[in-house]
Length: 146
Image (cartoon, rainbow, N blue to C red; front, side, top):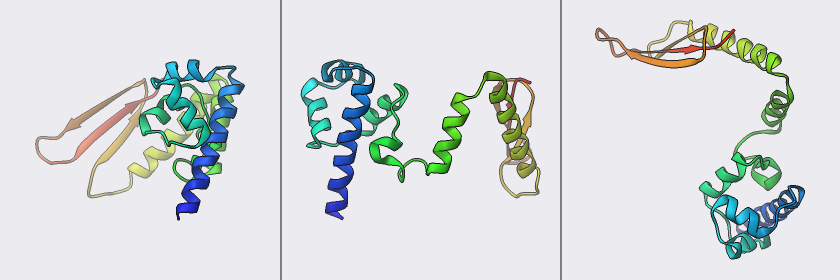
């Protein structure tokens, strides 16, 4: 277990340095962008320290691929990552079509009889949640622009 963790940290360190260099950022520049000191950034890239979730989240927001940083098992499997990568490369029109397909499928699943929360999918982009006075069922309506 200890050896596996050490390997994971080393994979992270190598991937972090590689992705930073791909973005043509210095250690100091990346450190400033994610809110750590240069010294801490160096420790991450040398595998001497492992970052907190906030740091990882900031990397993710900046477009760092967490799968390449060695987190495939922790976040997404390769098929899920491939789907997300293809979605991101799609045109806005195709993204809308993909979302519509997923939401229609989700709506069909939710329309099956259940004893707990129900969800309804309809048309424009917003989310609203209502709690019925007569029952404890929560109805969530998700609108998607068509």
